[in-house]
Image 1 (cartoon, rainbow, N blue to C red):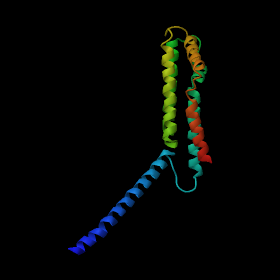
Image 2 (image 1 turned 45 degrees about the vertical axis):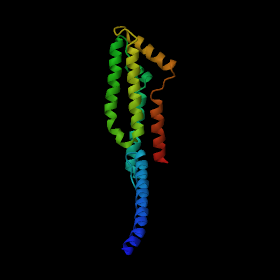
Image 3 (image 1 turned 90 degrees about the horizontal axis):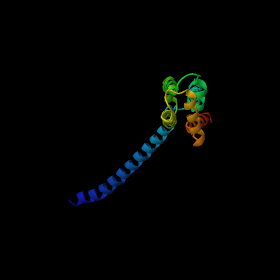
Image 4 (image 1 turned 135 degrees about the horizontal axis):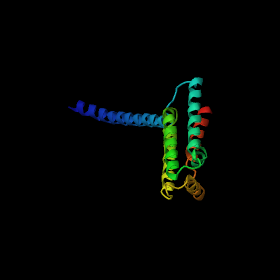
Length: 178
């Protein structure tokens, strides 16, 4: 009986130390995995693959181009035509944003979750700006009225809906290159 008590006195602290070590190592491994996941979704091990690097850089280029194309000032310059109504301009702008987004959906696999979410947020903010501005004008009037309201809103609030996403994409691309 005394041998069992001595065995328990030795085994119980050893088991507690082993359990504590297991939980500590498990937590460290989980943190490292989580930290690795916070970076790019498309990680590679070993030396960088030149063709993969080129594909990823093209994805960054395409997404920055998308953000520049959907910026309200650029949309207005590209889409607005004399003789169309405010309502038509609104629909054309929203359709263009949606189509451009559809063409770039696959690029999300090459960038981080943070970058992709900022891009989606910028797209939604621009849609909201267009719709909010369209609510302030008569839908049948000439499109110059809607264009004016959108540009005034941009200037009044110093609003740059795509700037944050572009900055994040550039930083991520620089990190990939350096």
